[in-house]
Picture (cartoon, rainbow, N blue to C red):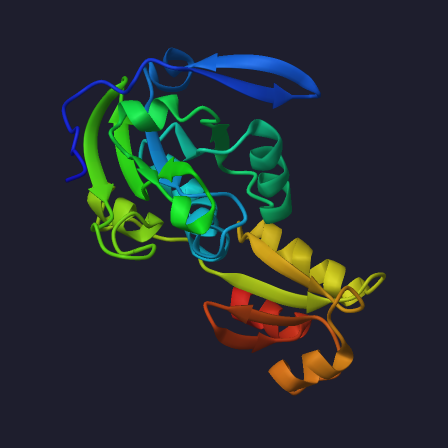
Amino acid sequence: MLPNKEGQKVPDVTFHTRKNNEWVDVTSDDLFKGKTVIVFSLPGAYTPTCSSTHLPGYNELAKTFKENGVDDIICMSVNDTFVMNEWAKFQEADNVTVIPDGNGEFTKGMGMLVSKSDLGFGDRSWRYSMLVKDSVIEKMFIEPEEPGDPFKVSDAETMLRYINSDAVKPKLVSLFTKVGCPFCARAKEMLKEDGYEYEEIVLGQNVTTRSLRAVTGATTVPQVYIDGKYVGSSEELATFLGK
């Protein structure tokens, strides 16, 4: 059975990282001492669940976590620093600190190192998350020991409910735009003025006018969605925001 280490200190490890093309050693004290930190650990960068849900979930809720007393969010994996850094760039995970546990020392110290030899991965981390306060583990969410790669309790939503079940989550905003569109620029300006973070989907960058029509029924941009609901053009967005 995988151990729950609530009430214990995190392992004392030195992580070998790359920053600005230089080697930088980071210790457990650097990451955890005097801080409130969320850690979520996963089997591997670029793998399906890790890329589609686990990392994006924490990245999207980072602002809410910090409003509720969290100083940093760490993504840990038994991968080297080059892989972790490139994955973070690819995912645009600017709100999460990726830490490579390349030798598996931290993961082994947590009792979470498991064999994935059947997949050709060697030893990797079991999927889990934890809340650490001043180097002491307050809470752990460990995925059940089931075949495959279960993902039921280590997600960002579960962690947020533990920290503050009444926390207000940011609205999910997406807008279709195209380069050089003044109405698109105005829509983005209005969203920024009201504190909305947004995903920009740019026509011509793997997205076509056909895609725009299929999703929105419109042929002009911008087209805005908030929390899955269609808002419309820049003029309709202004009305929605009360401008």
